[in-house]
Image (cartoon, rainbow, N blue to C red; front, side, top):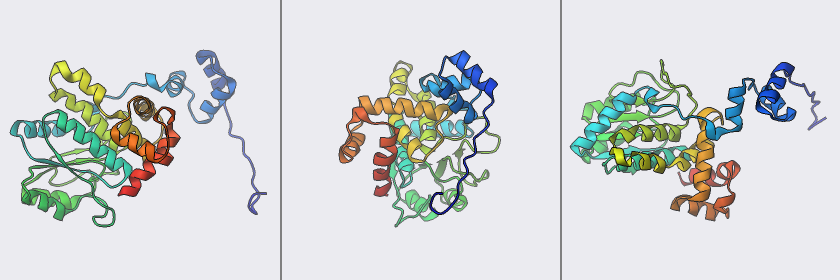
Length: 297
């Protein structure tokens, strides 16, 4: 009896043959094998990647729907030295995704500004009047992160006033956004991207990798190494994304980066939480760092 209610424990059925197979092929304990099978992980290769996420390959960003239009429009902005503004969101995922996009666009030769809305003053999403104001201020291109996939009126306003709008997002999309020049979202109909459950920072992280095409070949390796995977990790944990597939790899790599060489901003947040960088884990990020970022918006 718990809290006045009677509870009945129901044991989940666990196919013994699948457990034995994992034990034999992966040399793991019966307890670990049972937990994996109980959670639906019965294939040895999938189980191995779950246990060793550092071996999980990152999917090719070129498979993201809308990526070609995104790259073409960014290439035009680079050639014409256009004024660009990034519109993020007020939560941890929106902040980290905007920071990743800022990193990438700076590295390819642009000098974008960033706008992070306040939940009380601006509300959620990108609004038509804000788009019109950016046109009047002389911007030629807007790039959203973690928002915009249902902004029908905003796309129409962008087309009306003559400013190009790129939407990058992970929320449930409206597949027909009038007026946008590119819409990148793994959930779009017909998406061939192998894993849909990445957050806004995850989408920005993938786009940052795709933008390496505009970095001189001799600097591409260094550029990829410097992409802020620690920020993608924070966004992934803050948005409570499933820790499977490449999300697991992003979190492992991001935690390693955060422990060894945390950015100035992350170090300040950790100091505020009285956490030493070398001792942080996913729980530290989810319950100490992410709430501090969310509170700012």
